[in-house]
Image 1 (cartoon, rainbow, N blue to C red):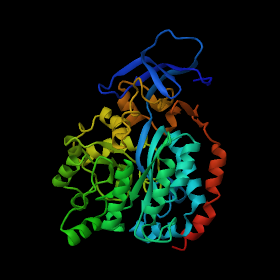
Image 2: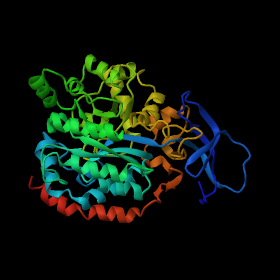
Image 3: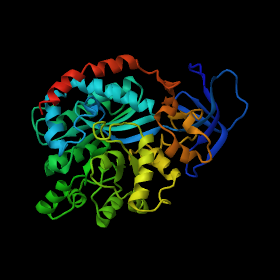
Image 4: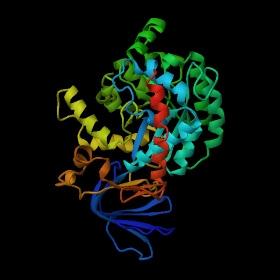
Length: 441
């Protein structure tokens, strides 16, 4: 697959296109043309002006860029620490972050995490962490699309000396990034058990004022459910609904411990859900009832959670686990056909993040966020079903070319929008400091 890029239109030919449009049209031996950042042609191969940039897909699968609906990108320096630790969040992660997380670590971690996502075919991510200005800066430098949300907690955090300081940070952060082409700022109260009624309402007011995403962990922990029952005689979803902060901008991460009434509330309020199967299974939290949610018309996308929770940031590996675990959990192998899983990874994720008008499918007028999955590797043949091949046969190493906003960011399986050798060196430069402190926790 060779290309020669400049400001001309770009033709991608000899590809099998998973459009992920409303009809889920598949175009074999197809062609996509984009100019600047927009797709201008999708269809069968045709004659074209020779004065273009040409990418020969060599019978690859061309699909929309994948979307990671929930992660904590800058947590990557802590990957593989305390994987089997009980109550890791409160006893291990929070203390570790308090002592180690600063602007430098956040930026270095984000730069590496964004590189990893791009190399795995993820073109858009939704992040929740501290010093989100550094995350936004890293994503922008590597030309990745991001929903970047500042964390709010009820204790002094790495980027604030006072409880709920994330609200003030978010105010400045939102103003700085609200008109950017790639970065959309948002607010992220960490969870019910780390926020007050007042802080949740303040975050919601910011979301409403600027019409930006509001995301938080919901119904993930058993002690969260117990606390809501004891204090309010409500479920976590019921409590949030009573506060009046659920709406179309609300991205509910995890959402495992919910009942039928909760699902009905989510539907009525048009709340979106990020399904994080790998982190939830590894943490033994449970399985989000996405089948019931889908039946109720709730938009669902896929997320990895932080790289300390799932140890990965790509969506390809999530797809396989979603299919297998839900089939096993429900004792029914016919559930969640592969095309539905690919939809959650692409168009479903776009709907969750409110970006479905511009990304998530390969259609004329949409942004050129595209991924070429090569089919020459040993694990990719034979192909009878393109969707099943993506979900159950492929892995991140099959991602050959990635385009975000019309710019090639991964070519021939290598990052080209940044110097990955330096990015990796910077990350590993944190290892001794992290390891020394981690051993004393």
